[in-house]
Length: 71
Length: 226
Image (cartoon, rainbow over all chains, first blue to last red; front, side, top):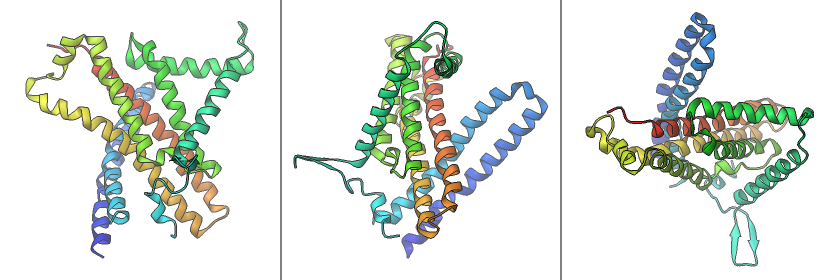
């Protein structure tokens, strides 16, 4: 049972990634609304930022899966 | 959830070669993808004409836009990297799309993804020494300040680790979610979710993998400003 709780705690990393990606996407939308001609560059920067921010959530997920499946 | 234990079990079932060793199913699927890509490349480029046909025009647009992307991010030496990046992009994309046909994606295996990431790291750091020269390449590790030397050296390992973890984690997560959904509702519903998890997420992840490799490459080839 402790393993299940540990996995649940590990998956909490998703909160940070969610907030981070949400803020980044909101700002990117604002930026595109202000300057639609720069949308290409904004999109690529957003994609990169999201990929980097998402990494923490993925680490949490991998840790949780390792905890559950490799006892 | 009877097959959940098989998720981490890499040698679940495979091809037995004369009883000597087993070829894992991921390698088999990889070979299939490689065969498909090779044959389709040969067929598509067999009969090139000066005035392009419809198929050739499509092909030219695809390759032209990919070359433009490389030019934009890598600058002058783009030509040395475009073929490698394009090949990896195609391979990863097809690996991620393969679950549409009910096959386990090779990118779900940690060893396949780790190999790709290690190759990316070798490419990044060999480009640094190739295009900056040995001395400047070494000096690059001490920029922007010598204080950051340990962090830059750690980055040699962190970059490929994060590259492979990202791809592996995403593919594994979508695979597990799809398995669960298949167990709960085997018809109709998985189709829509598969569109999101396999097509959308798979394409995004392959784009991100190539994009990050390109960015690291362009960063490692930059001249130091000191």
